Amino acid sequence: MNTSSSEFRSGWTALLAATAGMSAGLGLNAYVNNIFGPYLIEAFDWTKSEFALNGAISIITVFWIPLVGRMADLFGVRNVALFGIIAYPCSFILLSMLTGDVRLLYAIHFMQVIFCASTTATVYCRVVAERFQKQRGLALAICAAGPAITGAVASPVLTAWVDSYGWRSGFHALAVFSSVLGVVTLMLLPKRSAQKRNTAPRSARKDYGAIFRSPAFRIIAVSSFLCSLTHALATSQLKIVLADHNVTDVVAGYMVSVFAVGVILGRLIAGVALDKWKTHIVASIGMGLPSLGCFILASGTHDIVLLALAITLIGLSFGAEADILAYVTAEYFPMSIYSSVMGLLTTAVGLAIGLGSGLLSYMLAKTDSFTAFLLLGGTLVLFGGANLLRLGSHQDSKDASLKATA
Image (cartoon, rainbow, N blue to C red; front, side, top):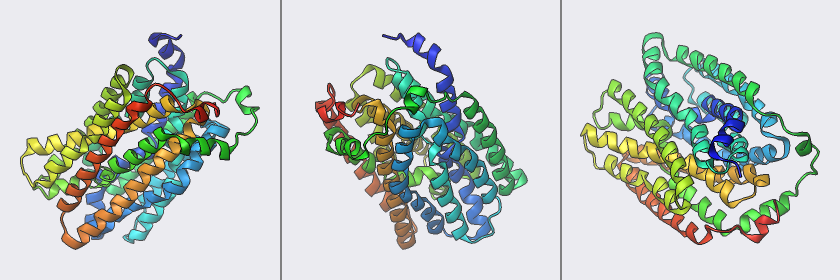
């Protein structure tokens, strides 16, 4: 059995490649949207509900992400990731050309989701999960923390850059950054072995049938959906929510950094905890944290400490969720269908974000307030976190049907 140190010695290049790839991939959008949202709303006189509706485009992941995951299982991570590595910088160039028609923003975001879905955890986490066992949680946490670290460092820097040179120049800077990291990722990603290239194609009917029959999958998918409904706030609305609490733009920019730091800590803490303690307990706590944050924000408080606590809790869970889903996929399912399962779980998250964004847009149009959405979302997140405790009865074994797919 590999020791922890030998795992990191043998797998560090794959871990670094996956971390760099995710740091310059679609996961960065959570921070990009939070930073650029207020500038775009001011520049083009869009309503908050119009900008919030942009998040609903993620609903197309319901149809697309599972296919991306399946392709990663069949054709290898490197081949599939290439499409997103090229497309993501191009999307920022297009965003810098926005003219005021909000439909163009929607169209570019649609293109991002289609072509850049291959730069997400569904694809990259596979190369990490394959090479780590004893410290898989920590390795996956390091990988998933890439976008959060980038967001924490870039948020105040990019905000200052945009204030000085304009939001169009900010998008140009992001295009250069993602291009450079994309090249690094391609240089370090391990090539697919000849043995895997020559393996006979797997049966989709057999694999997906086993997945959907798994009680563990159903528990994880339902909880992923419920716990992700409030991500519409985390991915694009934080500065706008804070503005409603009379927080200045400068302080709100630092709050976004607080969120990003929370994401980093959430991923690392969850990773270490998953390697040491029962998965269902760590998952329940980690994914249920936003409920308290939502309730604090719904209270209408102007206390900076309480607001920072709320943002931190949301960030901690946002980070923990990525590591938890990547870890439970490797724990409960064979590696041969890892990305296929991750694709389906990402679909549950994407569906929740899309529906949550649509619901948020509707509630904002009706009330011009975030309160009702925060109360509803916080309650559903609480239920989703509690549901994960049911995984305890499946902790020690995989279903026979899943073993047959290995």
